[in-house]
Length: 154
Image 1 (cartoon, rainbow, N blue to C red):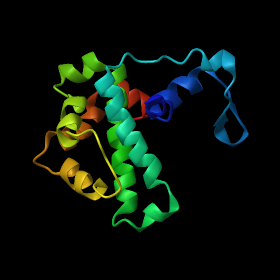
Image 2: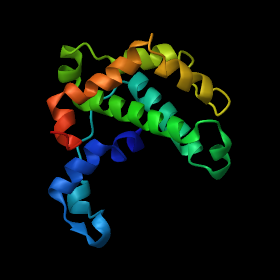
Image 3: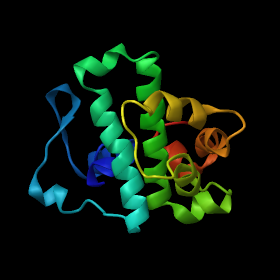
Image 4: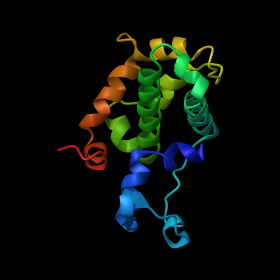
């Protein structure tokens, strides 16, 4: 679950504000900066859901996963979804004030807490359904000031 937020836009924004970029735009992983990284409070259920989506993304980046129909779109959607969960971990008050409960909706889409390559297309389709609240919630993230700041939106 730790990878969920370490690879998020939020963490890149935070880390780049305390560390210097080197040639090529890379960030250095010096311990003096790494120990400043905030770790959000998360329930075991929230950690598990982040792990499920992180695991799916790891699997989707394997060469043989590229054969899945709509592979790039699935990867992009799952990254957006996982980033939304990370935002909820760090800014629960802001999201909940706008009635954005991404973990609740994620738990409904993954009731058994599993996501395998076999059911990824099915979960992808269900999660993007206009009838499901998750799609609207992920779209509404862009209305939250903290998210707009982190993602460089004006």
